[in-house]
Image 1 (cartoon, one colour):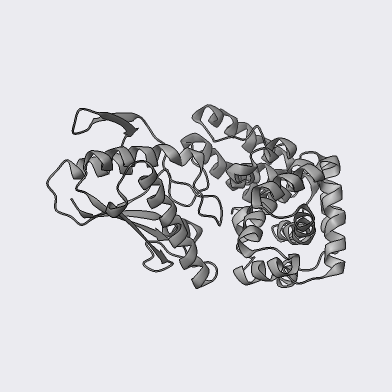
Image 2: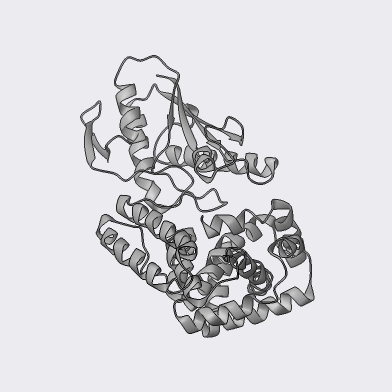
Amino acid sequence: MNIIETIESSISPAQVGSLARTLGETPDATQKAMAGAVPALLGGFAHQGETQQGAARLIDMMKGLPLFGSIGELFGVKNDRLTQSGAQIVNQLFNGSSSGVTEQIARFSGMKGASVQNLLAMAAPMVLGGLAKQAPPGGFSPQGLMGFFEGQRRNIANALPAGLSGLAGLLGLSSLGRATSATASRTTQTVARTAERSTSGIGRILPWLLGAAILGLLLLFGMRSCSTETAAPTSNVSLSLPGGGTVDVRAGSIDEQLFRFLSGSTPAPKTFTFDYLDFDTGLATYTASSQPTIDGMAAILNAYPTAVVRVEGFTDSEGDDASNLALSQARADTVAQALVARGVAASRVSAVGVGEARPVGDNNTEAGRAKNRRIELVVTQR
């Protein structure tokens, strides 16, 4: 379970639109601010929940909150009681850093600072209610909540948009960069600490042990939560391009597959699924770690000037159909424009958004939805 995805999936495009009207901001700016606000609030809760005393305070804050669904229904509708309660939560959560959090989200999203303050105040009870919904029967104990955050900190850190990297330090998440195999040795210690914290038998500890084990696998293979399935690179290969140039790409990646196809004789069309391509949650901006994939593809396409390609964007079935279609088109456009910016003729690259159509995975499971959130490259002419 990814707490970021759980909470973000509860916020519909219609609610974001209603919130934008309430705040007097554009839907795009509001959506962008939400992409920073949700992980920022969760990061603040996780930072506070690092100690038993802090976790106990959070549990007290959870008591008396409306049901998660009720808060979701109110989200985007002016509610003074909800906003006042949320403002108190934000003040307690960030202490002296609230102005810095507000400033960074405002700069990132283009919203006014006062609008971001109101957005945080409205989102805080919903996010805290989302945490409360993950409690085992009988509610969280301080130790249980600490264990929960320990299993979610990387999801939270990875969800912070690239433009908000400065928030990591404010929220105590700066030590959680992209996982590498060097950090995998901590997995056994994490499982052991989680087991020691349980006070109610194996029934209470099992979810945290499973969470820690999954986290360990992610750490071991260097994966991260992203819009496409991303496997850890084992090595790079140097490809000799027509005309004498070379390009280094990840072994087995879409770049190498594209090169092998274009240098061979298999007829078009041919479809490839992007790997190593991550997008900021709910946005059409790809992360800095995705740039090598785009760079390598552009170099290969420039070396084969007769090749014509189409970039196709897909989403899962979560959310509004029209919004999914628009997001898939925007992401496809982003990739196509990036290729053109690197020298590929615009006449050779087109982009189309498919939305949630043509799923390749089961939308009833998170693994299936992750497969459906993808970008494909179709070579229509060699």
